[in-house]
Length: 258
Image (cartoon, rainbow, N blue to C red; front, side):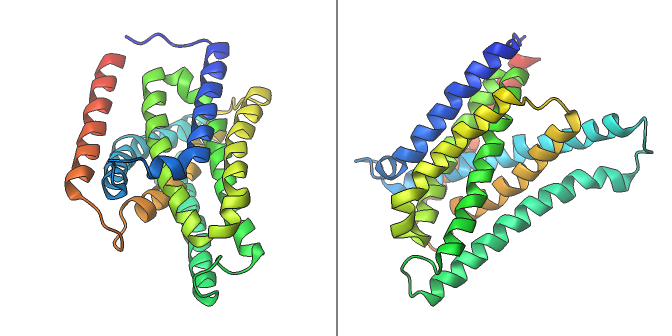
C-alpha cells in the first residue's frame, strides 16, 4: 500500500521535479554528448521507454479521464458514447496542433536552405507551443505526486529523457535561435507551470481530465516524431531494453500501489 502525500508535500515534490526537468532542458546538449554513450543508443533507449509510457500509462490515463468526465457530468447530462469520445477528441486536437506546427517548421526550413527554419514568427510560435506543453506538465505535476509518488517518478524519468531528444529536434530546426533563447525559456516555462499550480491548484476533475488529455495528444506526437526516427541511426536492441524496463517498472509499481 502506498502512502498518499499531503497537499503541501505534493507541492514541494512537484517543485523538485520541475527543477530537475528544467535542469535537464538546460543540460540536454551536454547529456547527449556524454563520452562512451553513443547518441544512437541513448536515443533508442529513451524511445523505447517513452513508447512504453505512452501505451501503458498515458493512454490508460486518458481513458480514466473519460470516466471522470462522465461522473462529473452525469447529474446534468446524459452520458452517451459520443460524450465518452470527447476526451479523445481533445487528445487528437493536441496531436494535430503539434503536428501542424512541426510541418510549418519543416516547410520553413526547406525554404531557408537548412539554416534557422524560416521567419522569427515560425520559431516563436513553435517555441511557444512547447512552452505551453511544459506548463501543462508541471501544472498537473502536484496532482500526479498526490495520486502516486512512484508513478510521478516514472513520469519524470519518461519526460526527462523525452526532453533531451526534443531538444535535439528543436536545435536541428533552429540552430541559432534555439541556442540563444529556447532552452532558457523552456526551462522557465516548467517553473512557471509549478507556480501556477501552487497559486491556482487544479481542483476540477473535468479540467484536469481535459488538460491531461490534451497533453497526452501532444506527448504522443512528440514521442513518435523524436524517438522513432526513420532517418537517424538507431538500435532496436536498446529500444527494446528501454521498453521492457519501463513496462516491468510500471508493473511492479502498480502491484505495490494496490
